[in-house]
Amino acid sequence: MTDRLRWSWRALSRRSLLGGCAAAAALGVAASGSLDDPFGAVLVLRGAAVLLACAVAFAVDDPSYDVLAASPTPLRRRVLARVGLAGAVAAGIWCGLLLLAAAVGGDVPAAALSLEAAALASLAAAGAVVLQTWRGIAEPGLLMAPAVAGAVLAANLLPARWALLAPAPGAPGWEAAHQRWTAVLCLAVLLAAVGTRDRAAGRSAGAGAGQDEAP
Image 1 (spheres, helix red, strand yellow):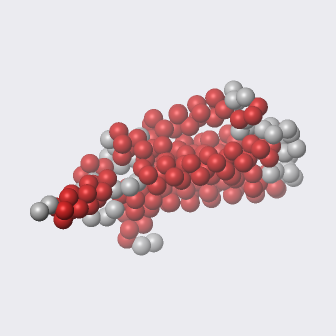
Image 2 (cartoon, one colour):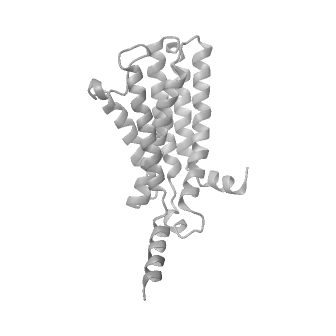
Image 3 (cartoon, helix red, strand yellow):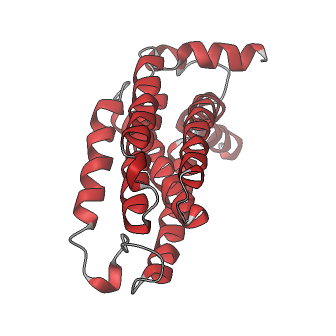
């Protein structure tokens, strides 16, 4: 592990990250008897995906955010290092849950559910980044985690033409729902890219251009 990754790991809110990942793993183990049923497996794994996304949201937390704003290390690099480490831990738990489902004989749509999990985790991280950089909230995880959980609950109320939570493979709207999940993932990545743009650098560049144009 490089020094940068080592320091990024130390900067993580590890208790919240590991607690959320442990809760997802515990849910999968406790509900393993439901994983051999397609409907039950989708429900359990979606619940685990929400918990993992909530855990990833805490990766953006940084009590020293105001101090590090003056750091020569770009904001995007600092955030991506922490989110990447948190995502790697969450991905390990997710892969373990998929293996558990396969071990109990469940026919799980792994690719489709992994898309949902990736979209949720990306959205959680992107939302936390926006709260931190645009609203100045150094530790946005406590706000973003319940927001993600609430958004998933609210998704159950969406009309059929916008539905995201088709119950199982083969159900009406399953393919269309995952096209929408792809759009959610792309939107989250775009939001994260905009949110991690170093605004101070942009202002400096603008100021420099103004000086060049001055007589």
